[in-house]
Image (cartoon, rainbow, N blue to C red; front, side):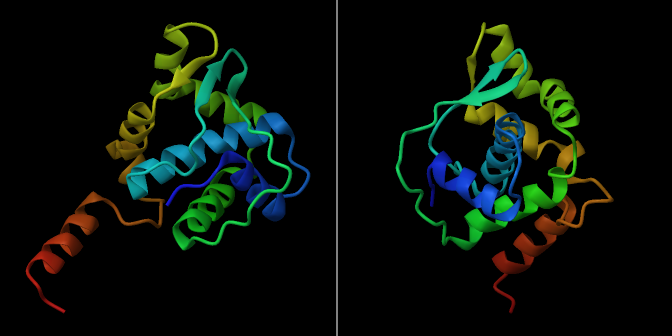
Length: 154
């Protein structure tokens, strides 16, 4: 299930009121990347663009955002806020600019689209998924569960 960026921004604002636009846009980079890596589908349909100062997007003009009810969508937003929202906008910008998807888009020119495939690959790389300080399952744990389920054991 996918939603709109307006709905995601409203969910972010509901959980972390007072964040600036630039910081919200940077958080959207992480939210979209993690959701693509975890769910194999985008969190929101709008494109992200790499800019000199970080990330921007095409926001649609919707009067009222629709509350997000999907557990996977809300889980991604909550996880990203827990992991990244305490960082300053400058720190988030540094992380975004160090990320290969942002760098690839910037090579294409000003405000070039950050492709979903680039985000998926980046957020699935071993440095991201096998971090011992991260409480999410690592690749080995995921493979073990998948093998268990494939064997049809309860």
